[in-house]
Image 1: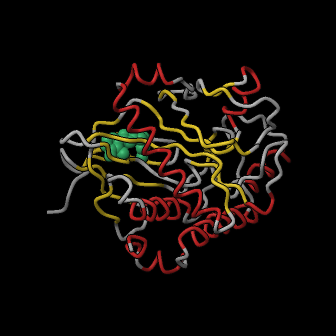
Image 2 (image 1 turned 45 degrees about the vertical axis):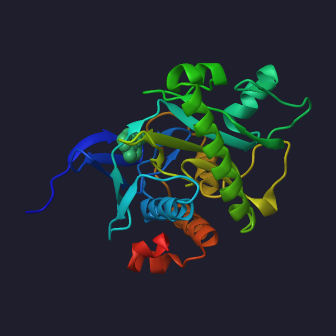
Length: 287
Ligand code: Q0Z
């Protein structure tokens, strides 16, 4: 008899199902969001690019930290994972000043309690990467928190461990990405704890949906940077004068095709694996 899966949760672009008490199924769709709105048009294979990249990085970082991945299914968009007790914080690391980090810096000169040098401009590289945890908002936006607030949620030893591992992962992946012409400006990781109390990397990792990827050859601090993957979509939406509230606009074929090509290019540059080979045999990314 085939397995049955019970739907557990939905994200903007992903679904979680329970396979049994110990295992979850994460399915990544081809949906795309921009300005926090999911658009009515899908990007073919986007879910496979994100799933393949995440699985690739889980395999590449196993010696830094264990992860939740148990199996990558033949459809290229579904992964079986260990079910963990998730930490109630988002583990964010920033090497560059963008998004809410930039906003907080402008308002206070600090990000999550890290006092930064005066005179930085938007998208500047930071003197060193900083760990900037956030709460997990059920609806709306995650809130940046300082070390004390995060320790109140997870305890000091777990906080210190999550910070160290998050920074180690960022240093490793950002160096690999830089060698392929991609700046990893920042990224959000989620960790869980297994039945033995070990910290385990979970969710998705180092995908364009959980990270800011910037093309290094266009990097110019002093303003927002073009997104490696979503810039055609953003530019098209801006050209319409759309109010950035639901519902979003349909995308024309040329924007869909250009965006799909950017996702595939990110996959191929970062993994050095032809995307066709991933489609034929997803497990190729596991090395
Ligand atoms: C991840 C999320 C998604 C909506 C729960 N290994 C795990 N064990 C327990 N819980 C999770 C994981 Cl990955 C878990 N999320 C985030 C993912 C759709 C929300 F695909 N929620």
